[in-house]
Length: 239
Image 1 (spheres, one colour):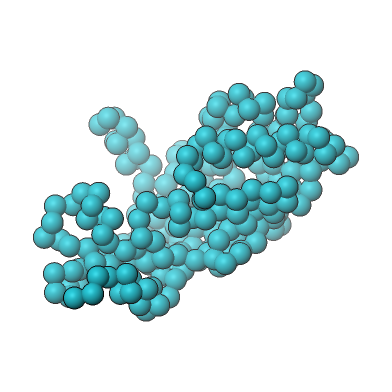
Image 2 (cartoon, rainbow, N blue to C red):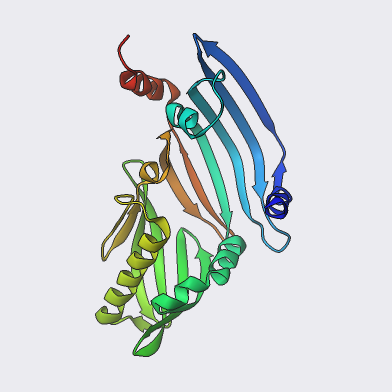
């Protein structure tokens, strides 16, 4: 366990972090500002948080820090600008051998302007090479992954039977990994991710934009702090 923590710590780099603490009665507010926070390995460009402002509300410092105290707190991400590298995504995919049992092999991701391309092989009786063009949109503060085109290889449309099979396998993969109901909605045309349902805490974050360039997937978002605090106050028990 110590080796795992040490290994992960060696992957983290800070270039700027500030913290402010304020108190109201027995509750505390911790406001953190991150600048150029890297999680990376030598052979990948990793994940970069260019900017993030995180406010933790109603955090009781008099209690021992545990799952309950974290659950009682609220987390407001006021500003969020995340870069995920193509090299890191491909490393994660290559290392995940569990995809093979779903009939999906040799996955690879490439980026082009405002589009993410997924290549791989699909086994359903026979093996078919496929590629999927993906675009990203924002729906009510959540990321929506739009399936733009399905190709057999990189030349002709993938037959509907194989499209349906591929999507059913994608749905099975998502359910097997997340095991959280109502956090992902999948159709023949898109996948929508409810990130607030994924987070086991009271989270305030709306995504505002997703961009793709040659090397990075860029995810941007934030939530108005005052509006979040109004919502938090409404949840508090009446005195």
